[in-house]
Length: 153
Image 1 (cartoon, rainbow, N blue to C red):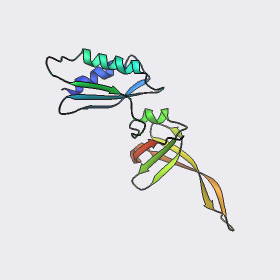
Image 2: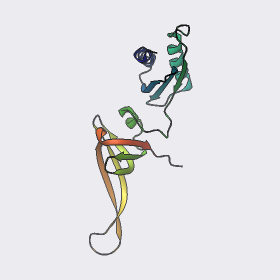
Image 3: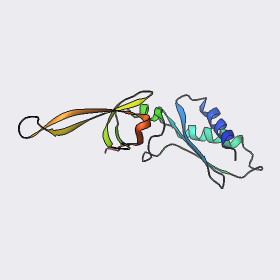
């Protein structure tokens, strides 16, 4: 299967709804096509069906047999594209870099970086005991090895 042709079909289907975007596209050795799409306000099932029909209707099963799956990202999977960060502002993220791990509320996501904020207990500068302080870190996307949304019940 030609991955570029399938990507073009996905992009064509996504063009009619600007809030949707492609997260991942993979084709296995046995021609299982898996398309993962997300949306700024979520992805209704009807959109997954529409995208699937656009792909399926433009490929010839007589020429090459395939299976097709159009899904949305699993909450347990890491964030992959910048638009996912924008969608998750004010949510708690667990972010890993090469040197450290952070867990905080995503308060901003720009073209180049994200900003996390959290509260921490630290020893008082003078005397005994601890004090609660507000911490903030700015991380560039290229520093981030993995970022996941933390599920809070």
